[in-house]
Length: 164
Image 1 (cartoon, rainbow, N blue to C red):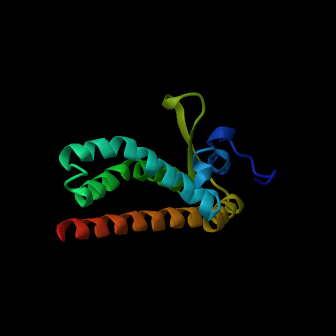
Image 2 (tube, one colour):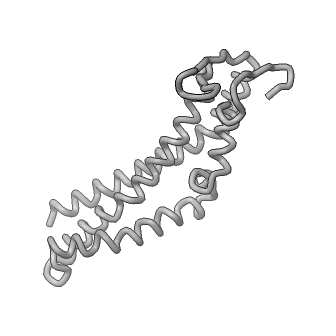
């Protein structure tokens, strides 16, 4: 932020600092990594989720008798935890995007009972919008594409299920 701009918002509540904190967070940084480093935790979470989904699916469909139904049900069930993690990533980045794009910043000086708003000057708003355009929006697009791929996998699994 430009030193000529006097900002009454506490440092930890400034949208630019919320963005920096999110970008450096071990969990939210995950969405900023290279493609392999981004996909790897999704696959690991999905694989670990089989430890729960597999036995649950086996109760409904014995793998010895109904291997395809078992595999489809377990795969769908194992997708829940990675999908929730991706949803949390999306919501966190979406929140920061909203904070950066807002023309005013709501903040609390000492507690929930004394909320204030600060009107962003044009130069701060321009800086925040550039961050959204070049940093945050690509992350949200990546997460959206991931959700589309998960949705496509569910559709393919559903078609396979009903064709049995």
